[in-house]
Image (tube, rainbow, N blue to C red):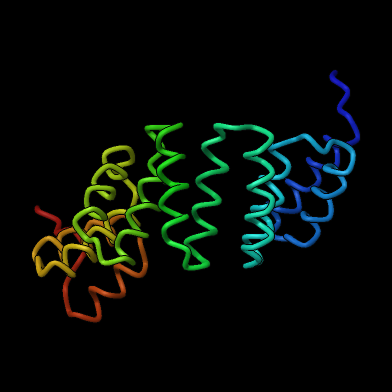
Length: 194
């Protein structure tokens, strides 16, 4: 049986608290781990994620910065920092980080989804659709990518594609898509042929 360090024990407790949704406690545990092992890039990222869950995106970005500093080329930290920048409305920084995440992990569908979402917020719907296409290619069950792509098509005036993608998202279980279609009186349930 392997013996873990005290820092690893704090980190593991932080992970358990995070999974339970106790993000304040997770931050305390991760901070204890960092105090004992200040060069652990993964623990900084984990603490940043806990801060992000609490909506404290500035603190999250500081931890992601430290994680990237300690482990250059850490695509996942770039993805999460892009997510935080997006929530702060700093779209150019978000796109830069999503680009870096994609450069480091070309098959990272979540990064394409994130970047596409930002392009949509900027009104660049054609680029957003390209990113959602790639996210769907990498994960054909990505309900949010279908929904967001449908929204982008709608913004471009292509209501047929909007409804088609929204129906797919609804059929995959995405509640906002289901609610939207029901509010429009559009059936999204697949028809059963007998």
